[in-house]
Picture 1: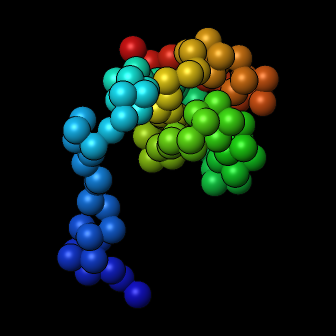
Picture 2: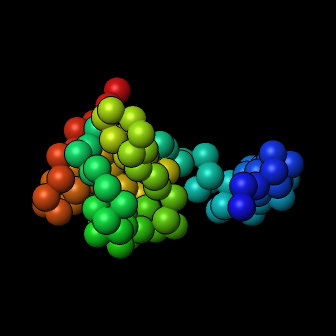
Length: 102
């Protein structure tokens, strides 16, 4: 079954949180978030499934994605605790290419 455009928009509408609804600690964490972007050679869903536990641990909240349609197989992580070098080390140790895109 193909989802209607209305259903798609409903499912993918982002939640917006205003600073007034966050605690001071949550606001600080939110403001320290960074998006790390890497070129990889992660080519298949099977490879994503293999590395997903590692990426979940690195992000502490599971906020990451791999774009299999992009020629660079782009890995994006949203984190406030993980460094670029740490991601590169872990992903390459798992057997994949991982280079920061700037």
